[in-house]
Image 1 (tube, rainbow, N blue to C red):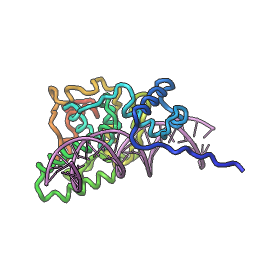
Image 2 (image 1 turned 90 degrees about the vertical axis):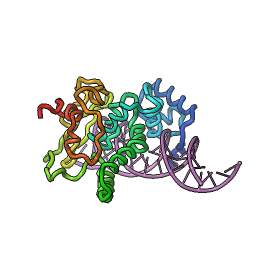
Image 3 (image 1 turned 180 degrees about the vertical axis):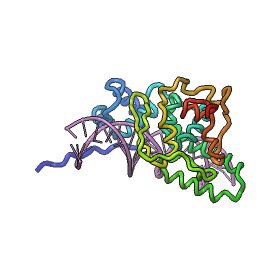
Image 4 (image 1 turned 30 degrees about the vertical axis):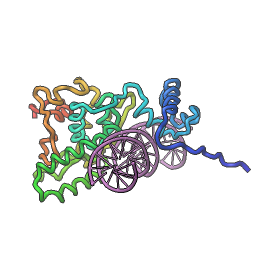
Length: 241
DNA sequence: AAGTGCTGCAACCGCGTCATT
DNA sequence: AAATGACGCGGTTGCAGCACT
């Protein structure tokens, strides 16, 4: 009778410097990918996912560590307005930053900041509504922090499934966009990488002709359609609309 | 100095998507 | 067309370090 091959117990919790070194050496020698085999071949008793995460978030070259700059912070806020919790896409606009880092930064710093701004801007009887919105956003995984239909208008809605093609590094990333994911529609109509402005254009974060002011959730829809978004989504500064 | 609570971050988990067979 | 495995993403958890009492 053939005995079942016993899976080795995988290590969890924090990575040690020597483990980092092993993984780094392995990936530099063999290249990225085939994470499932990395643990076997490298001798690391870690799951493929764990190895991939560690490489992607910490060991990869050009990873930027340390405090977020004001520009990065602005960009995260604005991108979050545009995309919602699409951390990998947001991180893709921030060179050297990872989705995990952006996500953590949002949850620990910016989320509070925005909520605070919101609270200041809204009067006290809106609190229940805010909570509901938060819950709604939580439930809708793909949903950006969208609010109830502004002024009863109906926004662009999709009648068919659309593909949004976004390059992330060398990998072609495609997300299915279904009816209701409205901001995906905005982003699906253009290709980030064909855009000819720098990744963090000064203009987009406060340069001439573009507002750098924060936009909080309680602002009307037009706030989402500010010049930055329009520039990105439609290739114009908004003047033509 | 010790205990407690809070915060921030690293890492894990579950699920969806895609490629391959 | 269906099954399977690999990969990527977003949500969540666990823990170390810090502040406060």
